[in-house]
Length: 110
Image (cartoon, rainbow, N blue to C red):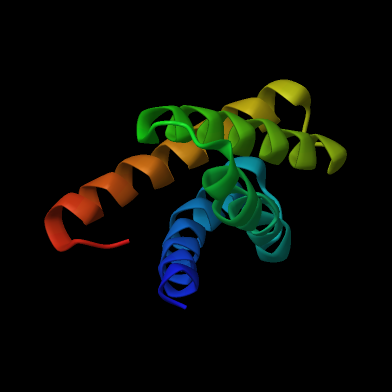
């Protein structure tokens, strides 16, 4: 249960950072903005991270590449254009990663 709780805190934190970025940058509705991370985050935490067996830094590289790619594809399906989808997916994921690491250093969460 502690792993699920840690995931839930990280998921909420990530959504709080990424939803406004997608909403403003791609001009999508809040549900569509929420949907991108709702697809990738559980796969990262419950499939990729526990089963790849890579060092932490490589899990982050693979995980972020996965998230950017899948979220960009999701927005491409919503007809946001490839360049815009990739740009905003990269920016949203970079922002959530950076703020997550800063919050972890300062407060110990997520």
